[in-house]
Image (tube, rainbow, N blue to C red; front, side, top):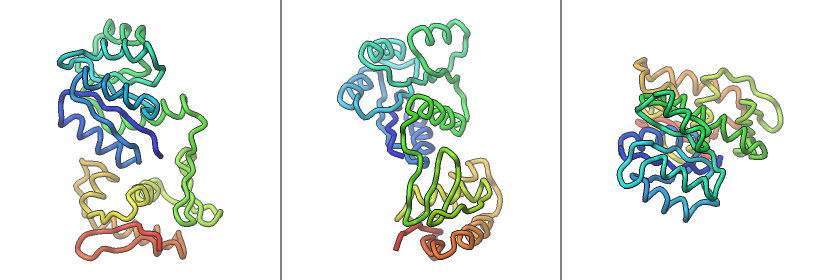
Length: 224
């Protein structure tokens, strides 16, 4: 997935949290810490930005001002992020052309799901099937095929395989895998990853060799 997301928020920790979850799903990211920088980046990258995550309360220019200027030249989807959840603010946002409105604090996984839903709705022609050395993953249908034959995976097995292939050639620690696939609130034994990897390798057949064990670290998906 090569969709590009512009994240606009004056809180660096918030930008990093959102970025980490989106990068794990294969998105490319642009960042801005205030309204003026957001417009500058948008002007330079308007043709490649697929969606904007825009905070309301920011220095220099607030989110409403940024949205007004974006809407003068673009219909790019915009999700507003705000600590204020009053009905009047939400109605005002929709009048300006907001596609979605999310109040802080929010679940990063829910935010990613909203992003994906909006992009599927606004860009139905986007290719959702990727081939990784004979392993075909349909991200829209959430199915996996090996050399054209359907492979039955559980939801967790699918999410784990997807995370590995989207980070191919990168050695991933077990802790990092747990944080991104099982979410940050998982406190179980990391050996559960090993059992899932074993099942995935078996189901992928000969393609299972692409999932390499990195001794003392974790795993790496590498097409050889």
